[in-house]
Every structure is written in C-alpha cells, then in structure tokens.
Image 1: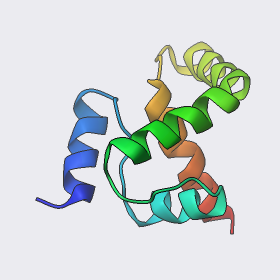
Image 2 (image 1 turned 180 degrees about the vertical axis):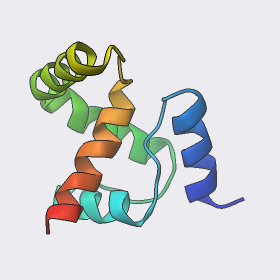
Image 3 (image 1 turned 30 degrees about the vertical axis):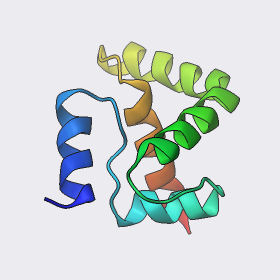
Length: 89
C-alpha cells in the first residue's frame, strides 16, 4: 500500500495524521514543512507547524464545532488547511 492510502485510512479512522496526497504535499512545500514523506520526522514537523499555529487551528476547530456540531481532530484541520493553500494557488 502507498503512503497516500495508509495516511488516508489513518486520517479517516483515527484522525492522527493528515492524508499525504498531492495537494497536501504541495501545501507542505508552500509552507516549507519538511520532510515531505510519510515518516516520524515528517509527523513531528507537522506537529511543530500545528503548535506554531495552534491559536488559529483552535479557533477554526471551535467555529466548525459551532456550525456543524463536529469536533475535527487537529490533524484533519492541518490536512484541510494545507489542501486549501494549494487549491487557492
């Protein structure tokens, strides 16, 4: 199985990692998050990125919960953010 498949399954089932698809990896490049492969170093770099921007992610999480009643996991928020960065390019 590919990194994309494994990470998408983990995101969907546990919410513990973003999905390492093309948009997400391009978003990592844009935000200068490295390395861009699915491994422990990369997950640590993503966690660091989340921690640096925790206030914004927490506000987004609260907004989504208020509007939908769903509490999105932090890694789902990172996945959505980096996807959106690339989509807007």
